[in-house]
Amino acid sequence: MTQTVESLFDTGLERYKAGDAVADLIPVFKEVCDRAPKSSPAWTCLAWLYLLDNKANFAYKAAQKAVKLNPQDPQARVNLAIAMLETGQKGLREHVDFAQQLIFVNPDWRDEILNSIEDGLSRKPDWQSLVKIKGWLFNE
Image (cartoon, rainbow, N blue to C red; front, side, top):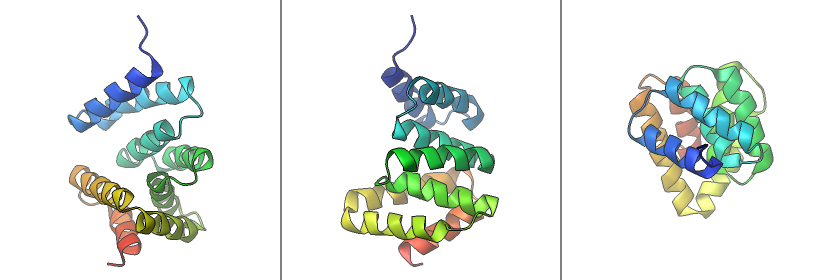
């Protein structure tokens, strides 16, 4: 029996939290995105996985879709900014500033972004782009 898109997404998240390899999870989230192309959370997750897997060009495209679908998602903006930094794109500051405004008005989003950054650095400790974005977001 084929899993529903929601259960596939939830299973993928659980596997991520359990520490499954990023390379094993990318196909799961690609399938979710293929089956639910208007799901901003799915595109946001796929972009994050691509970033962790050093596939910045793929991450950039996925993050662009996530932001287009939900411009108010600070994680999608952060992912896009990281991907832009890693691919040498211009205009990333507007996404950092917008994410900064979003996390300023919603403390829950602030905590989510901080947790995401810490998770990213625990999985990829030498991630300079993420360190740079963190510094810009939180004025460190």
